[in-house]
Length: 326
Ligand SMILES: Nc1ncnc2c1ncn2[C@@H]1O[C@H](COP(=O)(O)OP(=O)(O)O)[C@@H](O)[C@H]1O
Ligand SMILES: [Mg+2]
Image 1 (cartoon, helix red, strand yellow):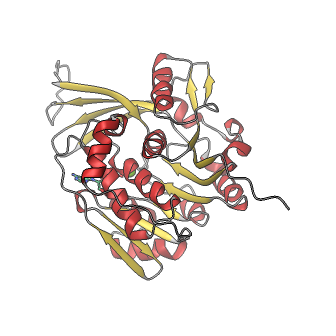
Image 2 (tube, helix red, strand yellow; image 1 turned 90 degrees about the horizontal axis):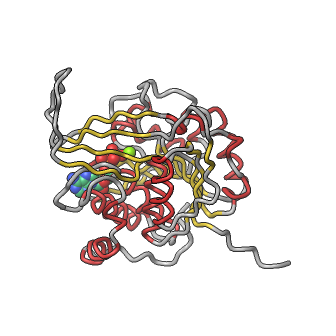
Image 3 (spheres, protein in one colour; image 1 turned 60 degrees about the vertical axis):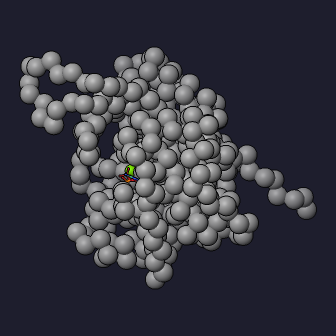
């Protein structure tokens, strides 16, 4: 008997790859037919799946990424940014045709934002685009933006079953449902998820109750570990009857675009290094906080000097080498 081969990746992700255009300084109300001037802009890597992938790689995890983009400039720029971040993008498919690479415009106000998305290729990524052997060659599989993956969604249960049957652990961050219906078999999907990573609003909607406590307990009945992101309040974790809480870090926030996705990256990075739940939560809050210090979801991670100084200055939790807790 030979020794089992080390998987090629720590995490594989199948999902959306697109850019975010963030505009700052616009009025809260947008009157029609007026020329409204933004005072600052940032064109940056967007899409929950690609932000998680990018930031996991920046933290030092080995990441493989599958996606579909159009044959257009914006798709190529997004791909280049992800590749520069150290993510393996060899399985990203370029599909020429009328559908262009997805794109999101974010109008960032002081404490809130509008988000407008052209789904484009995001909604067209499908089962046939996936190379399952590639996705399986990993310790963990992560899925983001469940409700944007319209073509893939009908086969997500099958996909997660395949991942689990191959010995991978699985995490899911649904992000928002643009239809605000929270259907599409989510509860069935959750049966194959080890770590569910919603924010507070998403946790309530996924569980179908306005009461956060009831929502957490309902979700924790299905998923071994539920992690709820609480914005500037930090986060909590629920594993069975055990509750973990972890405060946010105090930072001068530029925007919270991609903070939840960066949080996911921080959590998974520590989880895969064998850390316990409190350490994973602290590392996740730190990654979320880091994300808020620069525009968008990846700029603070791209700048290695800024990133390392920020993390080291706050005593980034050191992961102890123990078997993963799930
Ligand atoms: N203003 C902030 N200061 C410090 N950390 C923050 C701030 N906003 C968000 N975070 C961090 O980012 C995480 C995710 O943010 P949140 O807005 O809850 O998620 P999502 O982006 O999915 O809605 C939080 O749990 C926290 O760790
Ligand atoms: Mg989110």
